[in-house]
Amino acid sequence: MAAGSAAPDHPAVSAEPELRAEIAAQGPEPVLDLRPEKGFAHILHALRDFRQGMALFRLGWMLGWLDIKLRYRGSMLGPFWMTISTAVLVGSMGVLYAALFHIELRVYLPFLSFSLVLWALLGSTVSEGCATFTRSAGLIHAVRMPFSTHVLRVTVRNFLTFLHSVGVIAIVFMIFHITPTLNWQIPASLMLWGVDLYAITLLVGVLGARFRDIPPVSASVMQILFFVTPVLWKPDLIYTGRQYMLLDPCFPFLEIIRGTFMGTPVRPSIWLMAILYSMILWFISFLLFARMRARLAYWV
Image (tube, rainbow, N blue to C red; front, top):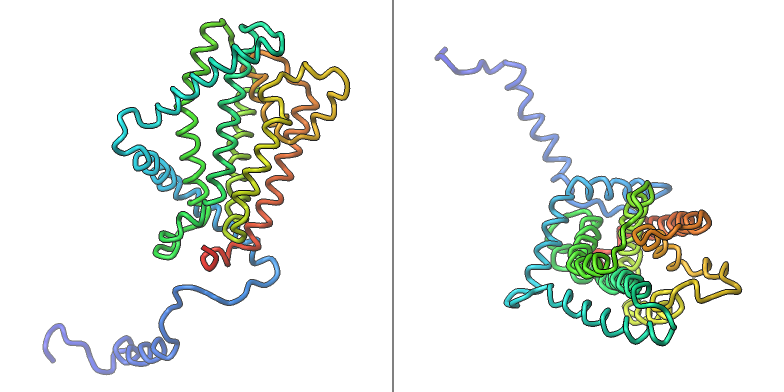
């Protein structure tokens, strides 16, 4: 027998045709499992989606960074136009409202600058979060990717836009010699803001993919909350019934980071409500995403 040739009765050779026939009988490996989810399968699949999305963190970050570059392509100043507009808005409104509220400018202007920049981040998270999946419809239909990656993409994009307005706060703080209180509240508030912004993007993204009326409804709600929440006015202006401000979920959300960076003591009740609202937000967002995740590709 020639060297290198296998014997016809060799086990591996004799079993190879049977193995091929068995694989051919099973058919091709499925690309997508369309069987309905039963029991807690939707919870497990949602958790797996989050795990895979965190593994693709660099991809989500680069997609968000690319969105910023494409949005301001051809512009001379790019996103710094937002910095200029924020500075003009803070300067003009600060002088006017400080006179209307009879508050010293050195007290009111830092408060207003921090409040407006934070509210701009929250507002952009809600408005752009509504189109998280609809704007990525082409990518969702073309590439198998965890849906949480698209949520991360929008969160990163809003965060990078927010950083361009931080300079206005820094300049105002340096002018009026305001030093943040360096303690555990700074990293805690930043972490809570990060996870809550992600949860908000996830929640309104799923709702926006299913109901196309969500963007105008959310815009109207945010406009109402802008005047109800102490953004233009300081909480100290309310003397009676101040405890009812905690019923507004935006107030503790803003105050835990605004008060910490401005050196104002944050009451434990505000922290408690902020954590409670965060837990409720994540509970609703995760259950909604787990329930509707399998249908998102058909809605966008």
